[in-house]
Length: 156
Image 1 (cartoon, rainbow, N blue to C red):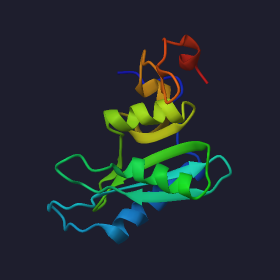
Image 2: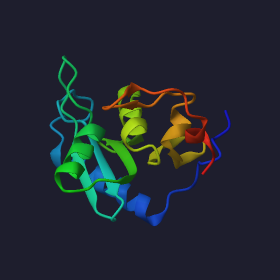
Image 3: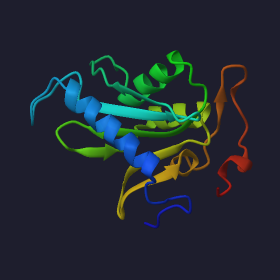
């Protein structure tokens, strides 16, 4: 499968973001290798002003929040309004992991220009969230599900 046109090698800022996510989960995981735990994923986001924010997941059988959503909430509570990049990293050296479907939809709806760092067949790359959501419909608080907008899927 070919990578999307927006795929690129990681920038220094993106590498720094991966390191923040890795160090956050390494410092806060509650599971040993090959063990289950409530905190096994770390995430980091970069705000449009350059600040970085991190979070960890809270696994629960009822559907606790993913690390990406915790990091987004942490950024918002820190005053960040725009997010330019995001990454999730597994504990014990598992490295970057792509976002789940729910996280992809949240990112697409609230931060449609965000770059997502994830593993690919060609190594870890960053891609636009729109490349992970082909033909998706945007949802907004004010208007619910919006009509398809092809402008969201133009190459950047």
